[in-house]
Image (cartoon, rainbow over all chains, first blue to last red; front, top):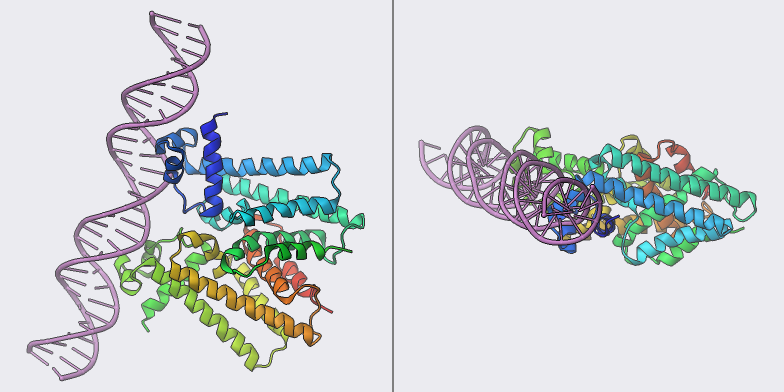
Length: 186
Length: 186
DNA sequence: TTGCAAACTTACTTAGTAGTAAGTATATTT
DNA sequence: AAATATACTTACTACTAAGTAAGTTTGCAA
C-alpha cells in the first residue's frame, strides 16, 4: 500500500473527527501533504470513497483491539476499561470518535459510507452488549437493565460527552468516565 | 415581528436538526418558502445571524418550559419526565436536538453562535443538575454520583441516542428513555 | 400627492467545492 | 531499448455557496 494513500486516510480521519465531514475539503488534505488536489482523486476518485475507506479502517482497528484483548485473556472489567480509554484519549486530543463525527452527517453521506458506518456502530454495540452480559454472568458487573439497553446508555454517554466537552468547560472528563465504570461495580 | 422572519427561523431550525448546519443552504429555505435567496439575507445578513437567532429562540423556549413547570408546581420526577419527552418527540420526528446538531459543527460556527450554544448547554445542564439534586434531597430520586456528573450522563445519553437511532435500527427508544428514569427510582 | 420605509426581487460577484481529462516524470518490466 | 504502470501535476469544468448593490412594489404617514 502507498504511503501517500495511508497519509490521506490518516489526515482525512483527523479532519472528520475535528471539523466534520462536510466541513473539510480535499484542499485541506492536499495542502497539508504538499500534493495537488487531483492526487487525492487518484487514490479516492470521490469523497465518498475516502469516507468509506476511513470507516473501514476504523472497523478493522476496533476488531484488532477486541481480538487482542480476548487473546490476552483480559477479564470484562479490564476490557471495558480499555474501551473507555479510547474516549479519554480522544478527549485529550480534542477529537470526537468516528461514529459521533459521521453520525450527524448521515443525510449527506453516500449509501456505501452509511452502511459501513452502521456496520461499525453495530459491531461496537454488539461487542459492548456481549461484554456487559458476560461480565454480569461472571459477577464482575452489576446493572438492572437489559445488557443491550445498558450498552446503549454507556455508548451514547461516551459519544456525546466528547461533544459536550467542547460546550461545557467545567467537565471533569475523568470523573465522568469513572462514574460510568463505578456504576457497574458490585 | 415578521411572519417571514419567523418562518425562516422555524425552517432553519428544522434543517439544522435534520441535515446539519453545514449541509443546509439559504437556497433550501428560499425555495421552500417561495422567496428569493436575497430575501433571507434581508432578515439575516449572514448565516451566522440566522444560526445565533435559532439558538436564542431555543434558549427562550427551554426557559419558558422550565418556568412553566415550576409555576405549575410539577415535582422533580414529573419535571424530568417532561424533559425527556422533548427527546422522544424529536426521535419520533427523526430530528436531533439543537445542541446535538450544532455541537459537531462548532469549528465552522461563528464566535457569537458558539457562545450562545455554550450558554444553552449550560442552562440545560444547570437545570438538570439542580432538578436531580433537589429531587434526591426530597427523596424522589436515588443515585450515587455527584448531581452534575449524573446530569451529564443523562444529558449525553439523550443527545447521542438521537444520533445512534439513525445508525442502529433495533433501538427501542421508549425502553431506552424508560431505563434512564427507572435508574433513578428509589 | 409626495415622501418614506418595509419587504422584498433582480442580477450580480466572489470564493470555494468536487471532480476530470490530459499530460509528465520515474521506475519497473519485457 | 521499448513498453508499460505508478504516482502524480497542470489546467481545467461545472456547480453551489454566501453575500451584495441597486432597483421595485406596497402601504402608510405628512
